Length: 170
Image (cartoon, rainbow, N blue to C red; front, top):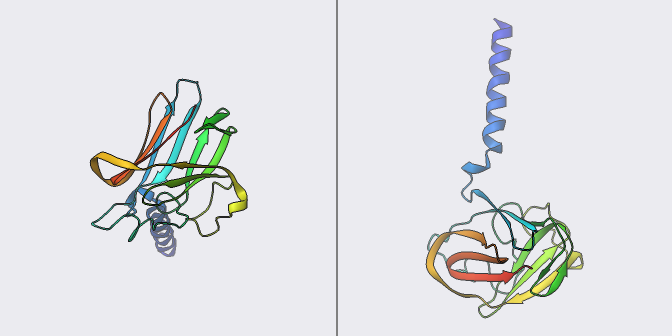
């Protein structure tokens, strides 16, 4: 009987740990986009999708003028299989933390050499590899959950609420 109780307790603990590790149950679920662009480079963006939920981007979420993890939970990662140029700036092949500094008229897109971190709490500007400035545009339609798209031509777009923040990778 003691063995049965012990086995039962171990099973319940294991199930509890597994449920905690199920990232799909988070309020901001995980997402990933992978595309091979025309140059042959493979781009992979691994992120979590916060929802707008009636909040204002730049004020209530992703505050203007502050470094943001560009998603939720763990910092978003941006990986390229080959050396590329982002908006004309060289980015070596590798995996990066993708951060942004949102602003009304311009967003700073940051590729940081520390990809595995929680949020932007330990973000260090000295670890930035490339920074590019891009102009946000009005999205063609409202997107409740933040979403990344990557086109074959290398256009990477963040779509969220009524915002579209795009940059080119060649």
